[in-house]
Image (cartoon, rainbow, N blue to C red; front, side, top):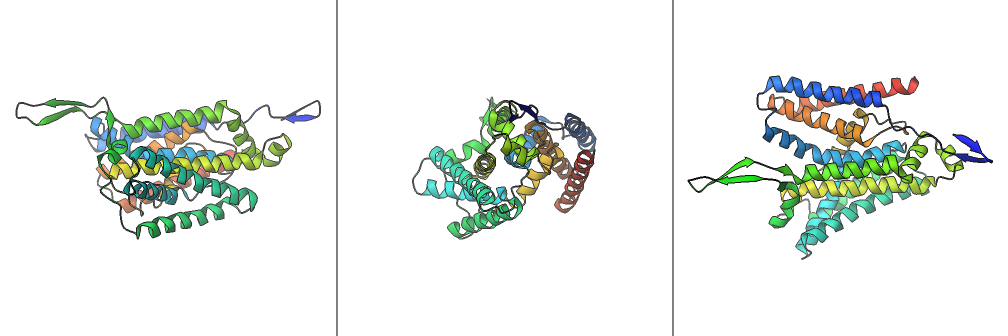
Length: 337
């Protein structure tokens, strides 16, 4: 902070710990190396694409979660908003709306939930934990009520393109008339994740809204005195988180080619874990999209590698929980220093 002609101006805003990000990247590489010894198929092209697909949903959620965490908040509603966005899209398709406009409608529904979160937090002065916990219950309840807790199926082949399509897929017809997949292609969700991560990183590091997000998380009162519209910045962050949850819902439901109102349970914890593992501080003011992407892939590789090793889902949860506790402990040490 500096004072020039009586006006307080922002000169430097933290963008996250490079050392923490480097340690997360080394952890990811060590995990890949370790799992490559446990299963010869781990480093195969097909398994790599599977990891990309599995990580895409968590990665999209982690981008929005990172924005919120940097402001000093938390969003526990993203898993339920994901499900509600999918339900809105499924019902819109059933009502006769084409797939693309229906998906856009679902993403808007997610953004609206995030906008309400931001309003409740800034205008009603309710803590982010309680406000988003309430939205988590509301969104899930609405999704279940609208569908009667039943899945929405028969949405057409076009609905499955986003989650199951790929670029550069190479198929060769064999002499027996059956196709042989030479290269399965780069999945659409993986490309979408890269695009959204680049956009998120650009906004966070190069645009005014990113500087405002960091300033609010670093020192809310100082940011307000510097002319930052704190409430507007928080509302923007939560709206973006909701929209990205909606987009993640489109990817997940499209992969399933069925809308499941019960999907997304506990996904908010994976998103928080990815952000924290990647260097975002729960105290606010510190974080990066690139770090969160590394965190998301750490979780994705852990799950995939443990699955291939035959580890039960319960043990996987225990291991990921230990990793999260370790990441938060390191964050606390960093904050004390």
